[in-house]
Length: 117
Image (tube, rainbow, N blue to C red):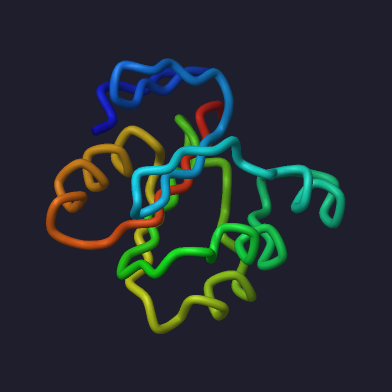
């Protein structure tokens, strides 16, 4: 469960993270590999399909992308195409957190959360 999010911080199961995170359907949490997108686009705010491929190791039904506190991160069209058979929810991180928590016991969710801009 995600207990809270604010600029530069997200709390999951009592653990505070001060970087973007990925939450797998199994519950595993890891640091977002945003350098993959940044290397190609010069910014980590364009979510590239090569970065998304890094997170496709577990089966999921819904991709929830927290686009940042102010919604700056965007899932590129080619990234969206990569998972077109899945439900995709892309919202500012505070809204994405609420949706993630509502769905986590109902569906297999891959959650990717940007915690700044």
